[in-house]
Length: 296
Image 1 (spheres, rainbow, N blue to C red):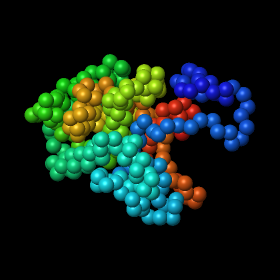
Image 2: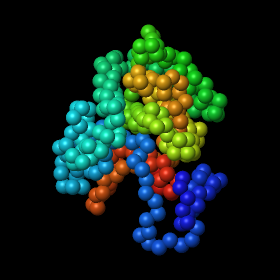
Image 3: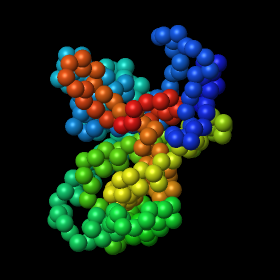
Image 4: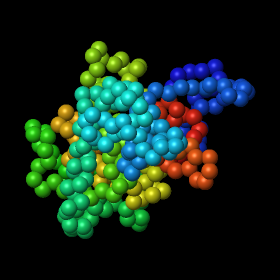
């Protein structure tokens, strides 16, 4: 987090680290600007209505949808040609994000055809970790993730699952969580393969890891979320392209992403001045997360 004469980073006993003012700040003072989000997702139902680059909402511009679409045909719409160009250059590097959007949709569609309630599904067999009678500790979480790794082995030579790997059934929110995680994985891949290499001090992934990991607290509050996160991980193991498979060879990276999701992300909301605002997705602005903000 960049230093500023207006505020300081401070650790609290009740909410991890946060920013506190050093003195009175005049109204309308610009405190901070953020880079593009490290991870983000637009709810699938709003894909045509929310710009994939700047997140502008079509209805706030008195439109029903945006009509500028990605050339790759991967379900991303934009408010302008400018936003589409920036997205192609900065987010869809090497076509990865577009290819992954298509891969997720294809895998999710194929899984809908499988029989609901199949006893071989990991929702029933390998991901049942929501027993509230079990004390939830860091050790029990470690064991659950290791168990998911063992039941979801891959042949990295071909980038395909080995025989017997389970096919997780995901709901819409879990699929959106998959897309959120993919955006972070791709950003790390871009950074890891950058030329010249990114210096440690400028690493966005390193800055991401500095955010508070809320996994244990979150699972203790909502025990069922562990099984959901395991399904997300197992789906990612099937969906990711071979070039990204190294990031899910173990559960470490996915677990780090999902553990920092809760409490650090920002909800994307419409700007309606009448009635209730509608949430359109969520995003992770790493440096912005240190400012007090409502949780998604």
